[in-house]
Image (cartoon, rainbow, N blue to C red; front, side):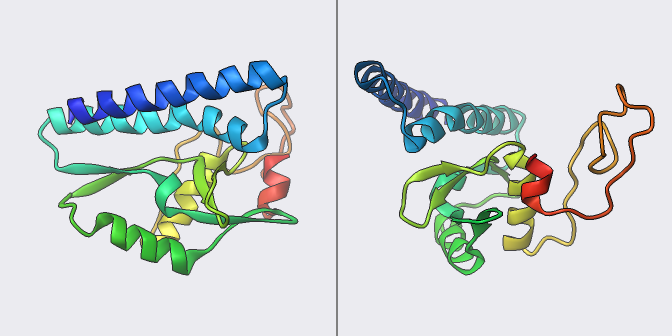
Length: 172
């Protein structure tokens, strides 16, 4: 497991170096390059957590959402293709024997096949999407406030919980 992680880390570090070099040459960063770069932390963290759990004797697997979660851009943000994502996840997990999964949040794959992200707070959105794809009875997101609020309650004492909003409104 550690050997595979180190090999993957070496490859993605090399890819990262190449992308950063190309950005420095052309003085522009495409959305795809940006998404690849900012998603690496999530991918590496998920891999490291999986190694840690395995070292503790737990039977788990990591899932790279960039390989299985298909999303498309809409007017209100990224929308998952649940049917194709479920099929991709089933295929991805076919030969894995695990008691639980550790899944990257924030990152996904566009319908065109490129790496993308779900944007600010995309990891919470990922949890909801995978909860749906895996037919989970519930998801739990740990946060420091109960719901989305009209302001930071540490700075705005009269902040109220907003009862309903779109994902796009939430990212604002």
